[in-house]
Image (tube, rainbow, N blue to C red):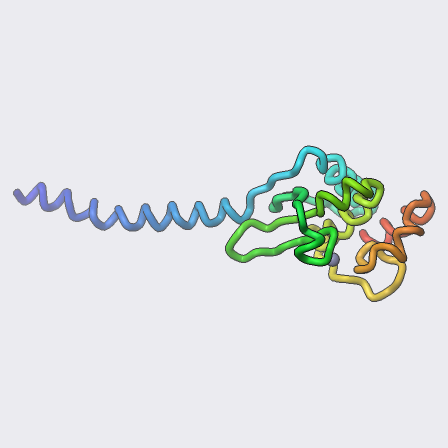
Length: 156
Ligand SMILES: [Zn+2]
């Protein structure tokens, strides 16, 4: 009798502890997971490369990176970086917009990457990828010389 009681007590002590540990671990996993839409992998690699040749080591993890239908309609933006305390951090791109303007995706990807992995906020000066208005700067981004300028400014 004594032995049985002795065995049961530690069991009841350990059980809730295990549950709490499991919940904590699940919570961590949800937030730190990385998923990259295969069609965006090239841009992730490009971001890491352009950072590396400018002396910035980028670890492109911790986000769900994907296209979303209706993002522009819902938020007024063609891209979004969402830091979420309780759910998964995300980087989103409007599906319809970039189907129509695929050549603008790199610019917006680098803008969102600036938020996500460089901790950059929106820029006040005109000539920056971190500017919030796409059109006025995008026209100048296409030239090879200007692309270098914009990327130097982003990873400065
Ligand atoms: Zn932004």
